[in-house]
Structure formats: structure tokens, C-alpha cells
Length: 174
Length: 339
Image 1: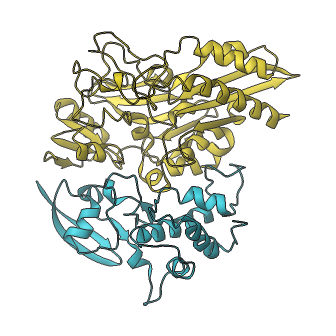
Image 2: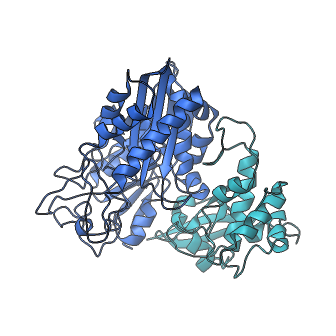
Image 3: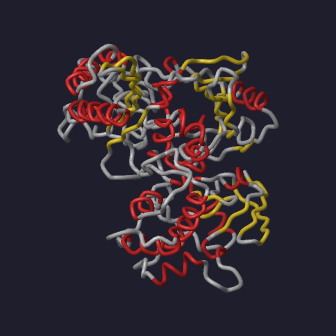
């Protein structure tokens, strides 16, 4: 059963016809040739497909395209502005925060969202005072908040460094 | 994946009428569990009735001082709500202990309550499962039960009703401790079900997780005013530090005066077919000295009927001492924090 939907992907409006069973991830990769979000597990367990869906990080592998008609999707590619890398992407390069790079687009989208969520004052599972208005992104906060993005190369230490450098914290001792 | 029709009705009433009239239709909210089930073949609906936008996405103050959480409120928004963080910290902590930032942005309050067990055999359609196909048998019976129930499970010698699945929700555990009320709308009108009566034990029908009737839709969850909840916490023990389901978890709130426990709320996660209210533990705690001996006695009272599984691949007897220790340390930490 087909449905025609519109997605705004990295600022560009795209109209496409998909089977109702198509996920947002497959709509991006297979229908629109937007291959920045990577398919890892396809079951919401690895985070490699992470994008910003209507401004928030989400997993397009578990989102049906028909249920997100009209949505705004930002991939890691779309975070760049005027040909300049997003500060998080720049930090991943500077900190050597990857090995094979497959999980990196998802990591970058997730990290950009972590900075925004902390800016909103959202606590995490390791925040000592849930009622506090401000959050300091130290190493344990960054690790917890990024825990939905697996890296099978094990670049975690440098990923935390990269996120900490953009967060303006040194992340504390390693 | 079986082909399906995706419907987006204009009102909750239309959505309810559609699902009530069509046994092949199911509600779709955040999709984080259902879409996975479509891929796995665990769920094979012919129609998805999308309720996104049809239930409230607001957390409202109630006149009695409690909070009404719309069924469409995302887990991340509920965890971030300053009123929840201040008045029901165990609920915020439980939400933050669940899933990942990405999933919490997608998952709704109603969907979180209705998520299905992560029993590996329930999710694997090549193995028998009484919850998926009533009367088929239970592969967990002699299998890998690290994440399975030790309380209230259905264990029968023939295996035809056997179900040792555990409910995976973190959010539901403090909601149970705080006597939340689940508000429903259905083909026969609206009703409110205390969460203490919302979840079923597997009994003779493991296929049903809750008392929901065909076509009923969760519209909101009410959190009653609860002074004791302001001093509450959630402790989750798992196989890795984050992004994993609970082996055991404890939601607890406690009031202490002059070294004596005057009131307590305790619920467990990861150990039963639903979140588990530890009323026996609460009874032991009330009026007793606030000491480790009391906390251990409370745990022992609740765990007296525990029936852990002993299988060739390890079983889950470890959960009894693990939960005993977790409850004891959680209560100790709460009381010390209050001193």
C-alpha cells in the first residue's frame, strides 16, 4: 500500500511515494539517496542512524515514513552550514573520534542534540541533583548522554573528548 | 513484513471506534516498540491507527496538587519537566534510566506503559511463546532467563500457560509506587484504572499484559499529590552502565521521624509480569527503626514467595540476593540523604 509524503531533508523539500512499511531511514537512503544516516542494527539498538527529526535526535529506523509526513529531517550532512563543518563534526576530526567512521554521522547528530538538551537544563541518569537548573557536561554526563550511540571500534574515549571540547569543558581527568 | 494500511483519524473517538471494530487494527504512537515488532513479525496488524496528536502532549497541574500527564507526552519531556523532577524525582530518574536520548524523544507515556516484554523468546517467532501464541509453550522455561521474572510468574508443569516474562518499563515502576491512575477512553466510554490494577499477572492468559479492553486508548496518567514522593529515588541494576534493561530495579520513597520509618512506598522492576508493588516490604518498614536490619527484613518479606528459575543456562536465582541488596542500599541512601 503506497502513500505519498513530503519530507524536508537538510533544508530541501522532497516529495516521494513509499510503501507504508518504509521507515524514515529507508526513505532517506533508498528513495532519496541521502546516505549520511547509516543503517546499523535497524532495531533501535545502535544509534548509527540518528538524525534530528523535527529538531530532536531520533532513530529513523523505528519511525515509519507515513507517520512522519511533513517532518523536518536534519542529517549529519545537513548540520554543515555554507560549506563549514558543524563545530561537533570539526571536533570529531580534531579529536580523532572515530576509526572506521560508520557510526560517526549518528554520533555527530547525537552530540549536537546532547549540547542542546543540556542547554535546556535536562538532567541525565548520572546528574546528581535532578532539580538543578544547570548541567555541566563532564565526562560521565557525556558518556551517559551518548550511550545510545554504539561504536564497535571503541573510539569512545576520543568521542567524549570531542563532545567535551565543544561543550566548553575539559571533561575532567581521563 | 505484512502490508498494512496507515490511518490518521481526526479524533481519539474515531481512532477508538476503528480499533474496536477491527480486530486486525492496532494503535500506533511513538512506534519504538511496535515498529520493531512489525520487523520481527511479532506483530502483524493489517491496519495501524496513528494516535499521534490525538491525545494530550501536556503535563497539567491538577486542582488537588497532582499532575496529569497526557498520553502523548514524550518520555524526554516528562523527565525534563521541573515539576516531575521536584515532586516525583523517582519518576524522572526512572525515565532517564530507560532507553537512550533518541528513544526517549520518540517514546510516549501511553506507549511506555504498553510496551511488551523483551523476553528473547517472545521476540523470536521461531521459538514457542505462550504470550505470543497462547498454548504454544514457553522456550524460556529451559532457556536463558537472566531478564525474567522471579515473582508472580505462571509456572505450570505442562508448560502450556507457563510465562516467566518480565515487564521492561522503568517509568511504570515509580508510577506504581505513587499510585498513579491510568485514564482510558474506549468504545463504552471513559474510565480510570488505578495502575495497581492495570497490569495483570500471567495467570492462565499470558497473552494479556494489562486489563485494557479491545479498542481502549490511554489518554493520560494522573499522578496523585504525594508528599512522600518528593523524597524518592530509582535504582536500576543492569549488565552495563547505561542503555540496557533492568536486571532488577527499585523505586522507593520513605519518610523517617526520630529514627523511625513513618511511611514508605516501594515498587520493583525487572522481576515480574508487570511492575511489582512491594506492599509486604512497605508493611515491614512502617513503624520500624530506620536501620539496615529493617530494610533487609522488608526485602525478605517481599521475596519470601520468590520462585527463581533454575535452568541449564544459568537461571535467575541471583536476582533474589541482588534485589535484597538493592532495596537495602536504596533505602539506606534515601534515609541518609534526608538526615
